[in-house]
Length: 293
Image (cartoon, rainbow, N blue to C red; front, side):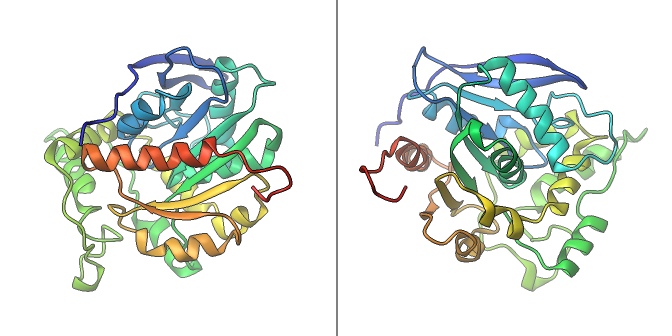
């Protein structure tokens, strides 16, 4: 299968109150509703590049790095909540889009929580929303994850933080949660290619001392309460290469009537083509007059 053409990606920085937000963009002069794509922790919008380029052929795409991740500066608050992180992202988006222009939202994992925060509090700005692979946790699971999952890190004189970072990036694809290395916690997925793990490792190293802030904020944000409050047309999805894709039925049950889908992912060119096409199909869908969205 021939790979779908991709729009050229560009990078820029946007000033907000707490510093600068780094944004990847794809824009070939299209009109219509822009798409804002929010990435998963602990990486950056780098991990969304294959989707940004494909979706950018049909619309303007803006993909910011969350504050304290990738190339974005952290917020001043050392323990930010999702709403604070979302406010900084919305400020950057508003610098790039007129504040009266609605946009669509895509969010993966942490990005799904950020997307919910924006959609619930600024509903007039968000037309449609795609929530990809957000986890649902019991109180005990959340408490354990908050205490162990995203440890604070600092550069080590012997470079041990480099070894930690590589294994942190890799082990998330072997066990879930990554720190629980019992047999029954093994993930039934192949490891991503070394190039993917390298890119993720580099993004983690860029934000070594602050990556944990958005991660912990994400685990504190309760999607079981947020998702049912959404009023925009929503697609609940997961990628088959996602370690939590088996939770898709539980995710979808939070918003009865909303479409849900298990997507191929982005491991191959064909998979990325199909995943982008599914997302674009939902965003481009216009219901018949009088029909439910």
